[in-house]
Length: 321
Ligand code: NDP
Image (cartoon, rainbow, N blue to C red; front, side, top):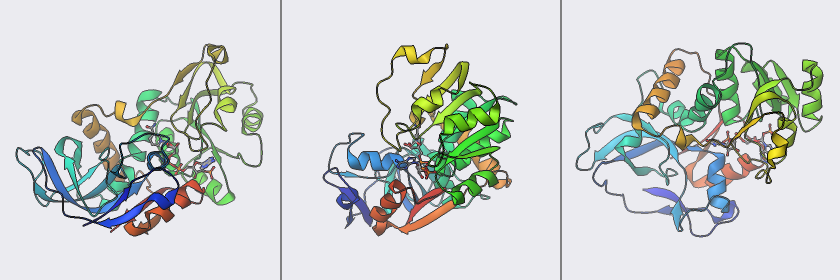
């Protein structure tokens, strides 16, 4: 089998494509032939050292594939099952061992690459729109980086819940994608001051109920300035760098601030499956459009990282064997 490993943190050049022995599934684990592994921004934080991991390490958290073998005491999955997962470090691999509690079955109506594509970004969009701030019809939200992996899915889920969606994007092509996903107002935040533009569109100083901000350093203050009293800033990522320290005084007028992470919203196998069942159902019914923006061979994981960090991707980026 082959996998991506790194022995030191740094740029994408630390990623090595290595051949290694097949892992043997331990008790409670399944060995899976990986059909597709998802590339996520968090992988770049692990690689760069922004989020520390013990080294040497594999990389990548999510994927989908077919169970090739099971270890002792596995009861939930069997050889031949189509499965998907998130939270299994080392998923940039042709074969991977995964705890059965982290696996979900992929229904027949859902292709494996689409399943891989929604495990991390789709679950994130799901918990943000339905749990962190359960959007209600008529509420106004802002989704930054609306043509990205989380962005395109979050726009669609926010529209399903009846919200009015403002979004920011970096290019005209990305604006077209965000609009096709259902965004009501698309702002080119590299060309204009997004906060002033949104104020102008809405006609009020503080129009938003909630800001979903995965961009971080460059957008945090502008987003905060748009929230109505008792609105929520959900800062969930650092694509432009981490948000600097915040004074509680910045949260006047009575704003709420949360820093959510996916793994707190899939704390049990039951919660994981409740969310994936809903997402897979929407995909099977043609109600959620999952855009695979790029596929890279596993050996080219570094190029996939360069594209993601260089803002050249849209939707999901997958690694395929
Ligand atoms: P995306 O596909 O959204 O890619 C990141 C996008 O961010 C880029 O395409 C770009 O879009 C925008 N961006 C803005 N400024 C920069 C910059 N300086 N450098 C690079 N990109 C920039 O990535 P993901 O969907 O994987 O993740 C989006 C965010 O969500 C990330 O911050 C990630 O860490 C976070 N996340 C958090 C989770 C959680 O539970 N907390 C779970 C999953 C993701 P544009 O060109 O339009 O500006």
